[in-house]
Image (cartoon, rainbow, N blue to C red):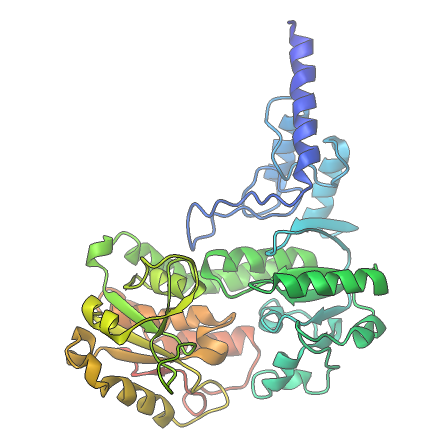
Length: 435
Protein backbone atom coordinates (compact mmCIF):
# COMPACT_ATOMS: atom_id res chain seq x y z
CA UNK A 1 0.00 0.00 0.00
CA UNK A 2 1.52 3.36 -1.00
CA UNK A 3 1.77 6.43 1.21
CA UNK A 4 -1.14 8.31 -0.34
CA UNK A 5 -3.56 5.44 0.31
CA UNK A 6 -2.36 5.21 3.91
CA UNK A 7 -3.11 8.91 4.34
CA UNK A 8 -6.61 8.47 2.86
CA UNK A 9 -7.36 5.63 5.29
CA UNK A 10 -6.11 7.65 8.26
CA UNK A 11 -8.33 10.58 7.31
CA UNK A 12 -11.34 8.28 6.74
CA UNK A 13 -10.80 6.77 10.19
CA UNK A 14 -10.66 10.25 11.66
CA UNK A 15 -13.93 11.20 9.95
CA UNK A 16 -15.65 8.06 11.20
CA UNK A 17 -14.47 8.73 14.73
CA UNK A 18 -15.73 12.30 14.60
CA UNK A 19 -19.10 11.25 13.22
CA UNK A 20 -19.62 8.85 16.11
CA UNK A 21 -18.33 11.45 18.56
CA UNK A 22 -21.42 13.64 18.30
CA UNK A 23 -23.26 11.15 20.45
CA UNK A 24 -23.23 11.41 24.24
CA UNK A 25 -19.82 9.89 24.99
CA UNK A 26 -17.93 11.86 27.60
CA UNK A 27 -14.18 12.00 27.27
CA UNK A 28 -13.64 12.48 30.98
CA UNK A 29 -12.09 9.68 32.97
CA UNK A 30 -11.66 11.73 36.18
CA UNK A 31 -8.11 10.41 36.37
CA UNK A 32 -7.00 13.23 38.66
CA UNK A 33 -9.88 13.41 41.09
CA UNK A 34 -10.82 16.85 42.49
CA UNK A 35 -8.18 18.62 40.35
CA UNK A 36 -8.52 20.51 37.10
CA UNK A 37 -7.23 17.69 34.91
CA UNK A 38 -10.55 16.78 33.34
CA UNK A 39 -11.92 16.70 29.82
CA UNK A 40 -14.15 19.65 28.99
CA UNK A 41 -16.97 17.92 27.11
CA UNK A 42 -17.54 20.60 24.49
CA UNK A 43 -17.18 19.72 20.81
CA UNK A 44 -14.11 21.55 19.57
CA UNK A 45 -12.00 20.45 22.53
CA UNK A 46 -10.04 18.31 20.11
CA UNK A 47 -7.12 17.53 22.41
CA UNK A 48 -9.47 16.52 25.25
CA UNK A 49 -8.07 18.81 27.96
CA UNK A 50 -9.87 21.28 30.24
CA UNK A 51 -10.02 24.27 27.86
CA UNK A 52 -10.68 25.22 24.26
CA UNK A 53 -7.71 27.19 22.92
CA UNK A 54 -5.05 27.38 20.23
CA UNK A 55 -3.78 23.93 21.20
CA UNK A 56 -7.03 22.47 19.89
CA UNK A 57 -6.52 24.22 16.55
CA UNK A 58 -3.02 22.78 16.33
CA UNK A 59 -4.27 19.31 17.26
CA UNK A 60 -7.11 19.45 14.73
CA UNK A 61 -4.71 20.54 12.00
CA UNK A 62 -2.77 17.38 12.82
CA UNK A 63 -5.96 15.30 12.52
CA UNK A 64 -6.71 16.75 9.09
CA UNK A 65 -3.14 16.05 7.96
CA UNK A 66 -3.34 12.50 9.30
CA UNK A 67 -0.75 13.06 12.03
CA UNK A 68 -3.14 12.93 15.01
CA UNK A 69 -5.99 10.56 15.77
CA UNK A 70 -9.47 12.07 15.85
CA UNK A 71 -10.97 12.27 19.34
CA UNK A 72 -14.57 12.20 20.54
CA UNK A 73 -14.67 15.99 20.48
CA UNK A 74 -12.75 16.74 17.25
CA UNK A 75 -15.85 17.41 15.14
CA UNK A 76 -16.35 20.93 16.47
CA UNK A 77 -19.46 21.75 14.43
CA UNK A 78 -20.87 18.21 14.66
CA UNK A 79 -21.49 17.84 10.93
CA UNK A 80 -19.98 14.37 10.66
CA UNK A 81 -16.68 15.36 9.09
CA UNK A 82 -13.44 16.97 10.19
CA UNK A 83 -12.27 19.84 8.03
CA UNK A 84 -11.37 23.51 8.05
CA UNK A 85 -14.91 24.39 9.16
CA UNK A 86 -14.15 22.76 12.50
CA UNK A 87 -11.05 24.93 12.86
CA UNK A 88 -13.21 27.98 12.15
CA UNK A 89 -15.69 26.82 14.81
CA UNK A 90 -12.92 26.47 17.38
CA UNK A 91 -11.66 29.97 16.55
CA UNK A 92 -15.17 31.32 17.08
CA UNK A 93 -15.48 29.52 20.43
CA UNK A 94 -12.16 31.01 21.53
CA UNK A 95 -13.33 34.48 20.48
CA UNK A 96 -16.83 34.00 21.92
CA UNK A 97 -18.52 34.54 18.55
CA UNK A 98 -19.84 31.03 17.84
CA UNK A 99 -23.45 30.69 16.66
CA UNK A 100 -23.88 27.28 18.26
CA UNK A 101 -22.10 25.29 20.97
CA UNK A 102 -22.51 21.52 21.26
CA UNK A 103 -21.68 19.85 24.56
CA UNK A 104 -22.32 16.82 26.74
CA UNK A 105 -24.11 17.83 29.95
CA UNK A 106 -23.96 16.19 33.38
CA UNK A 107 -26.93 13.98 32.48
CA UNK A 108 -24.84 12.57 29.61
CA UNK A 109 -26.94 14.19 26.87
CA UNK A 110 -25.47 15.79 23.76
CA UNK A 111 -27.01 19.26 23.58
CA UNK A 112 -26.62 22.10 21.07
CA UNK A 113 -27.06 25.59 22.53
CA UNK A 114 -27.81 28.51 20.22
CA UNK A 115 -25.61 31.49 20.97
CA UNK A 116 -25.66 34.07 22.36
CA UNK A 117 -27.71 33.08 25.41
CA UNK A 118 -29.57 36.21 26.49
CA UNK A 119 -32.54 34.74 28.38
CA UNK A 120 -31.95 32.14 31.11
CA UNK A 121 -34.32 30.24 33.38
CA UNK A 122 -32.97 28.15 36.24
CA UNK A 123 -35.17 25.47 37.66
CA UNK A 124 -32.31 23.40 39.04
CA UNK A 125 -31.94 25.25 42.38
CA UNK A 126 -28.15 24.86 42.42
CA UNK A 127 -27.58 26.91 39.28
CA UNK A 128 -28.50 30.32 40.72
CA UNK A 129 -25.46 30.38 43.00
CA UNK A 130 -23.12 29.50 40.14
CA UNK A 131 -24.69 32.14 37.89
CA UNK A 132 -23.72 34.69 40.53
CA UNK A 133 -20.20 33.27 40.86
CA UNK A 134 -19.85 33.75 37.10
CA UNK A 135 -21.19 37.30 37.45
CA UNK A 136 -24.02 36.67 35.00
CA UNK A 137 -26.07 39.83 34.60
CA UNK A 138 -29.38 39.76 36.50
CA UNK A 139 -31.25 40.98 33.39
CA UNK A 140 -30.35 37.74 31.60
CA UNK A 141 -32.06 35.59 34.27
CA UNK A 142 -35.75 35.86 33.36
CA UNK A 143 -37.15 33.21 35.70
CA UNK A 144 -36.14 31.09 38.70
CA UNK A 145 -37.44 28.05 40.54
CA UNK A 146 -39.19 27.56 43.88
CA UNK A 147 -36.05 26.71 45.80
CA UNK A 148 -34.24 29.89 44.81
CA UNK A 149 -37.23 32.03 45.76
CA UNK A 150 -37.52 30.33 49.14
CA UNK A 151 -33.98 31.39 50.09
CA UNK A 152 -34.87 35.02 50.64
CA UNK A 153 -31.83 35.94 52.73
CA UNK A 154 -29.42 34.40 50.21
CA UNK A 155 -31.13 35.46 46.97
CA UNK A 156 -32.80 38.80 47.77
CA UNK A 157 -32.41 40.02 44.17
CA UNK A 158 -34.79 37.34 42.88
CA UNK A 159 -37.69 38.19 45.21
CA UNK A 160 -39.72 39.66 42.34
CA UNK A 161 -38.64 37.15 39.66
CA UNK A 162 -41.21 34.91 37.95
CA UNK A 163 -41.59 31.54 39.70
CA UNK A 164 -41.32 28.70 37.19
CA UNK A 165 -41.89 25.93 39.75
CA UNK A 166 -39.47 23.06 40.23
CA UNK A 167 -38.26 19.95 38.43
CA UNK A 168 -41.14 17.86 39.72
CA UNK A 169 -43.85 20.39 38.83
CA UNK A 170 -42.63 23.02 36.36
CA UNK A 171 -44.91 25.81 35.21
CA UNK A 172 -44.69 25.01 31.50
CA UNK A 173 -47.04 27.79 30.45
CA UNK A 174 -44.92 30.44 32.16
CA UNK A 175 -41.64 28.92 30.91
CA UNK A 176 -42.84 29.10 27.31
CA UNK A 177 -44.19 32.62 27.84
CA UNK A 178 -40.80 33.82 29.13
CA UNK A 179 -39.12 32.57 25.93
CA UNK A 180 -35.78 31.45 27.41
CA UNK A 181 -32.79 30.59 25.26
CA UNK A 182 -31.63 28.22 28.00
CA UNK A 183 -33.35 26.28 30.76
CA UNK A 184 -30.94 25.05 33.46
CA UNK A 185 -32.04 21.82 35.14
CA UNK A 186 -30.72 19.85 38.11
CA UNK A 187 -29.14 16.73 36.62
CA UNK A 188 -28.06 14.64 39.60
CA UNK A 189 -30.58 11.90 40.37
CA UNK A 190 -33.43 13.56 38.49
CA UNK A 191 -33.15 11.90 35.10
CA UNK A 192 -36.86 11.01 34.80
CA UNK A 193 -37.88 14.59 35.57
CA UNK A 194 -35.36 15.92 33.06
CA UNK A 195 -36.68 13.61 30.33
CA UNK A 196 -40.26 14.67 31.05
CA UNK A 197 -39.38 18.38 30.94
CA UNK A 198 -37.37 18.05 27.75
CA UNK A 199 -40.13 16.04 26.04
CA UNK A 200 -42.87 18.48 27.02
CA UNK A 201 -40.89 21.56 25.95
CA UNK A 202 -39.91 20.02 22.64
CA UNK A 203 -43.60 19.91 21.81
CA UNK A 204 -44.47 23.28 23.35
CA UNK A 205 -41.50 25.25 22.01
CA UNK A 206 -38.62 23.40 20.28
CA UNK A 207 -36.43 26.50 20.48
CA UNK A 208 -36.00 26.14 24.26
CA UNK A 209 -32.76 24.28 25.03
CA UNK A 210 -32.41 22.37 28.32
CA UNK A 211 -29.03 21.66 29.92
CA UNK A 212 -28.50 19.68 33.12
CA UNK A 213 -25.88 20.34 35.80
CA UNK A 214 -25.57 19.31 39.45
CA UNK A 215 -22.98 21.68 40.98
CA UNK A 216 -22.93 19.42 44.03
CA UNK A 217 -20.42 16.64 43.35
CA UNK A 218 -16.77 17.57 44.07
CA UNK A 219 -15.28 15.30 41.39
CA UNK A 220 -17.05 17.16 38.56
CA UNK A 221 -17.73 20.57 40.13
CA UNK A 222 -14.94 22.52 38.38
CA UNK A 223 -15.78 20.86 35.07
CA UNK A 224 -19.43 21.89 35.37
CA UNK A 225 -18.52 25.49 36.23
CA UNK A 226 -16.17 25.68 33.25
CA UNK A 227 -18.76 24.17 30.88
CA UNK A 228 -21.45 26.65 31.91
CA UNK A 229 -18.99 29.51 31.52
CA UNK A 230 -18.47 28.62 27.85
CA UNK A 231 -22.22 28.54 27.29
CA UNK A 232 -22.66 31.99 28.83
CA UNK A 233 -19.47 33.69 27.61
CA UNK A 234 -18.03 33.93 31.12
CA UNK A 235 -14.75 31.99 30.87
CA UNK A 236 -12.64 34.75 32.44
CA UNK A 237 -15.02 34.91 35.39
CA UNK A 238 -14.90 31.12 35.71
CA UNK A 239 -11.11 31.13 35.79
CA UNK A 240 -11.15 33.76 38.55
CA UNK A 241 -13.59 31.71 40.60
CA UNK A 242 -11.73 28.42 40.06
CA UNK A 243 -8.45 30.03 41.14
CA UNK A 244 -10.15 31.16 44.36
CA UNK A 245 -11.66 27.70 44.85
CA UNK A 246 -8.29 26.00 44.41
CA UNK A 247 -6.54 28.23 46.95
CA UNK A 248 -8.06 25.97 49.60
CA UNK A 249 -9.39 22.88 47.87
CA UNK A 250 -6.36 22.01 45.76
CA UNK A 251 -4.09 22.63 48.73
CA UNK A 252 -6.20 20.33 50.93
CA UNK A 253 -6.20 17.58 48.31
CA UNK A 254 -2.47 17.86 47.61
CA UNK A 255 -1.62 17.47 51.30
CA UNK A 256 -4.09 14.71 52.18
CA UNK A 257 -4.19 12.63 49.00
CA UNK A 258 -0.92 10.87 49.77
CA UNK A 259 -1.96 9.75 53.25
CA UNK A 260 -2.38 5.93 53.27
CA UNK A 261 -5.99 4.83 53.75
CA UNK A 262 -5.16 3.05 57.02
CA UNK A 263 -3.69 6.27 58.43
CA UNK A 264 -6.58 8.59 57.54
CA UNK A 265 -8.95 9.49 60.39
CA UNK A 266 -11.95 7.14 60.46
CA UNK A 267 -15.14 9.15 59.95
CA UNK A 268 -18.74 8.36 60.67
CA UNK A 269 -20.82 10.89 58.74
CA UNK A 270 -24.42 10.98 59.92
CA UNK A 271 -26.77 12.42 57.33
CA UNK A 272 -30.09 14.11 58.05
CA UNK A 273 -31.78 11.44 55.90
CA UNK A 274 -31.52 8.60 58.43
CA UNK A 275 -34.39 7.11 60.39
CA UNK A 276 -33.95 5.32 63.73
CA UNK A 277 -37.13 4.94 65.71
CA UNK A 278 -38.68 8.38 65.94
CA UNK A 279 -35.38 10.15 65.36
CA UNK A 280 -33.46 11.29 62.30
CA UNK A 281 -30.37 9.29 63.14
CA UNK A 282 -28.01 6.59 61.89
CA UNK A 283 -28.21 7.48 58.25
CA UNK A 284 -24.90 7.57 56.39
CA UNK A 285 -23.44 7.24 52.89
CA UNK A 286 -21.46 4.69 50.91
CA UNK A 287 -18.44 5.09 48.63
CA UNK A 288 -19.00 7.25 45.55
CA UNK A 289 -21.91 9.23 46.96
CA UNK A 290 -21.43 12.99 46.86
CA UNK A 291 -21.23 13.11 50.67
CA UNK A 292 -18.56 10.41 50.66
CA UNK A 293 -16.62 12.51 48.15
CA UNK A 294 -16.56 15.37 50.64
CA UNK A 295 -15.00 13.06 53.26
CA UNK A 296 -12.43 11.85 50.74
CA UNK A 297 -11.62 15.39 49.57
CA UNK A 298 -11.08 16.46 53.20
CA UNK A 299 -8.66 13.59 53.79
CA UNK A 300 -10.86 11.24 55.80
CA UNK A 301 -11.86 7.58 55.57
CA UNK A 302 -15.58 6.81 55.52
CA UNK A 303 -16.10 3.84 57.86
CA UNK A 304 -19.06 2.68 55.72
CA UNK A 305 -17.30 3.04 52.38
CA UNK A 306 -17.32 -0.75 52.00
CA UNK A 307 -21.10 -0.93 51.66
CA UNK A 308 -22.27 -1.43 48.04
CA UNK A 309 -23.71 1.30 45.82
CA UNK A 310 -23.17 5.05 45.83
CA UNK A 311 -26.12 5.93 48.05
CA UNK A 312 -27.40 6.91 51.48
CA UNK A 313 -28.27 4.06 53.85
CA UNK A 314 -29.54 3.41 57.35
CA UNK A 315 -27.13 1.58 59.64
CA UNK A 316 -27.47 -0.08 63.01
CA UNK A 317 -25.97 1.79 65.99
CA UNK A 318 -24.21 -1.40 66.99
CA UNK A 319 -22.38 -1.36 63.66
CA UNK A 320 -21.20 2.20 64.32
CA UNK A 321 -19.90 1.00 67.70
CA UNK A 322 -18.05 -1.92 66.10
CA UNK A 323 -16.40 0.29 63.48
CA UNK A 324 -15.44 2.75 66.22
CA UNK A 325 -15.00 6.07 64.36
CA UNK A 326 -12.37 8.51 65.53
CA UNK A 327 -14.53 11.42 64.37
CA UNK A 328 -18.27 11.87 64.02
CA UNK A 329 -19.62 14.55 61.68
CA UNK A 330 -23.32 15.24 62.07
CA UNK A 331 -24.95 16.80 58.99
CA UNK A 332 -28.11 18.59 60.10
CA UNK A 333 -31.02 20.58 58.73
CA UNK A 334 -30.43 23.10 61.52
CA UNK A 335 -28.45 26.23 60.74
CA UNK A 336 -27.74 28.10 57.48
CA UNK A 337 -28.06 31.75 56.42
CA UNK A 338 -31.48 32.29 57.96
CA UNK A 339 -30.31 31.49 61.53
CA UNK A 340 -28.07 33.47 63.84
CA UNK A 341 -28.06 31.46 67.06
CA UNK A 342 -25.33 28.83 67.34
CA UNK A 343 -27.29 27.08 70.09
CA UNK A 344 -29.17 25.06 67.47
CA UNK A 345 -25.93 23.35 66.42
CA UNK A 346 -24.76 23.01 70.02
CA UNK A 347 -27.98 21.16 70.84
CA UNK A 348 -27.47 18.82 67.89
CA UNK A 349 -23.93 18.05 69.06
CA UNK A 350 -25.08 17.46 72.63
CA UNK A 351 -27.68 14.96 71.42
CA UNK A 352 -25.00 12.92 69.65
CA UNK A 353 -22.55 13.18 72.56
CA UNK A 354 -25.22 11.93 74.97
CA UNK A 355 -26.23 8.80 73.06
CA UNK A 356 -25.65 6.02 75.57
CA UNK A 357 -25.08 3.41 72.85
CA UNK A 358 -22.08 5.40 71.57
CA UNK A 359 -20.50 6.09 74.95
CA UNK A 360 -17.47 3.87 74.27
CA UNK A 361 -16.81 5.12 70.74
CA UNK A 362 -13.47 6.94 70.40
CA UNK A 363 -15.07 10.03 68.83
CA UNK A 364 -17.35 10.46 71.85
CA UNK A 365 -14.66 9.73 74.43
CA UNK A 366 -12.30 12.26 72.83
CA UNK A 367 -14.95 14.89 72.12
CA UNK A 368 -14.34 14.79 68.36
CA UNK A 369 -17.96 15.33 67.32
CA UNK A 370 -18.66 18.10 64.83
CA UNK A 371 -21.88 19.53 63.41
CA UNK A 372 -22.34 21.02 59.97
CA UNK A 373 -25.36 22.71 58.35
CA UNK A 374 -26.85 20.84 55.42
CA UNK A 375 -28.93 23.56 53.75
CA UNK A 376 -27.01 25.78 51.32
CA UNK A 377 -23.71 24.63 52.82
CA UNK A 378 -22.85 20.93 53.01
CA UNK A 379 -25.32 20.40 50.16
CA UNK A 380 -25.12 22.61 47.09
CA UNK A 381 -22.58 24.72 45.20
CA UNK A 382 -20.90 26.16 48.29
CA UNK A 383 -20.12 22.68 49.61
CA UNK A 384 -16.42 23.34 49.06
CA UNK A 385 -16.57 25.77 52.00
CA UNK A 386 -17.97 22.93 54.11
CA UNK A 387 -15.10 20.73 52.90
CA UNK A 388 -12.67 23.35 54.19
CA UNK A 389 -14.25 23.03 57.65
CA UNK A 390 -14.13 19.24 57.44
CA UNK A 391 -10.48 19.26 56.47
CA UNK A 392 -9.51 21.58 59.32
CA UNK A 393 -11.40 19.34 61.79
CA UNK A 394 -9.79 16.18 60.43
CA UNK A 395 -6.24 17.54 60.07
CA UNK A 396 -5.85 20.49 62.47
CA UNK A 397 -2.04 20.46 62.40
CA UNK A 398 -1.46 19.57 58.75
CA UNK A 399 -3.73 22.37 57.51
CA UNK A 400 -3.38 24.93 60.27
CA UNK A 401 -1.60 27.42 58.01
CA UNK A 402 -4.67 27.66 55.77
CA UNK A 403 -6.32 29.72 58.47
CA UNK A 404 -9.96 30.11 59.43
CA UNK A 405 -12.48 28.59 56.98
CA UNK A 406 -14.90 31.37 57.92
CA UNK A 407 -12.59 33.86 56.18
CA UNK A 408 -12.70 31.68 53.05
CA UNK A 409 -16.49 31.63 53.36
CA UNK A 410 -16.71 35.39 53.86
CA UNK A 411 -14.60 36.11 50.79
CA UNK A 412 -16.82 33.81 48.75
CA UNK A 413 -19.98 35.63 49.85
CA UNK A 414 -18.54 39.12 49.32
CA UNK A 415 -16.45 38.61 46.20
CA UNK A 416 -18.42 36.00 44.26
CA UNK A 417 -21.95 36.13 45.62
CA UNK A 418 -22.08 39.91 45.94
CA UNK A 419 -23.74 39.69 49.35
CA UNK A 420 -23.49 42.17 52.19
CA UNK A 421 -23.57 39.40 54.78
CA UNK A 422 -21.32 39.56 57.84
CA UNK A 423 -20.60 36.03 59.08
CA UNK A 424 -19.48 37.45 62.43
CA UNK A 425 -23.06 38.57 63.01
CA UNK A 426 -25.25 36.28 60.94
CA UNK A 427 -25.50 32.68 59.82
CA UNK A 428 -24.88 29.35 61.59
CA UNK A 429 -22.90 26.72 59.70
CA UNK A 430 -20.42 24.69 61.71
CA UNK A 431 -19.69 23.84 65.35
CA UNK A 432 -17.28 23.86 67.04
CA UNK A 433 -14.90 26.10 65.14
CA UNK A 434 -11.64 24.47 64.02
CA UNK A 435 -8.65 24.99 66.32
